[in-house]
Length: 312
Image (cartoon, rainbow, N blue to C red; front, top):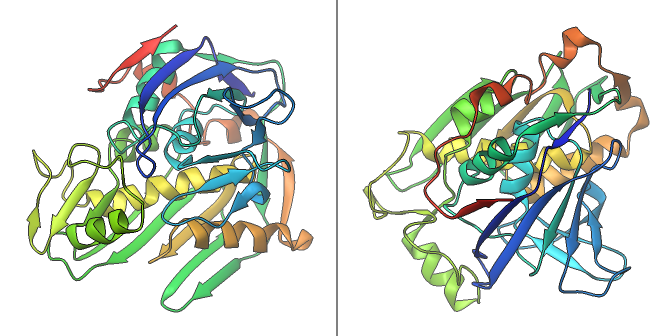
């Protein structure tokens, strides 16, 4: 069955790239509503943006969506991953700025807020998107691929010159709360040299060593070091989870990413939906529902998270 958040959960923080303070709430929504962002600082009637693959516009280093009137919300990938990972298909996300707060750089605080507020099952069947044949996009050394599977699986490969990251590979079956157990607390990462370039270009204005893992060669500059030895590839998988959620329903597919990022995953979804013979809608029977990413997650209860979370 479909699900929404049981009551509102509120988050406050700054945008990673803009540095602008934002207040954001996840609110319950009816069945078949989907995930929709609402800019409370913009006029009514022009301020809602569906979280869908075809609303994504080119952006540096994050996922940005825009409606027909030009209203935008950026850096949505971590909250989208949290919603997908907890099995929330319907929610209104009200925000008073143009960028989602970065919080600690992962999805952990969003997941904590969602589980603290509770998950409410709705009287409407859950539908999913089943892959019928493989779809792949390439750009230089980067590859993103979807192929048929009984439920969502993600595998990822990254390779960086910095020894603190190096080469990392990871594959996960995303069923039954794997996102909460394995990925949600993995933070965004970058190299110190990239930070300098980004700030020269007006990006990463809200970034700190506390909301991103910053590396320099073989050194991890962020206090406390890594949460996982392979935190970087885990975060890339977290990002992929959020970007794939823009399909509008759970994917029954295996996603493979090799040096892929936000833009590549969106190109992959565009390639998928441009080919009507590559996919189909299915209504999920109970034996399939129990293999979806958010199945059983509510049993974990609230998750410890360090930053401000106000649950209404």
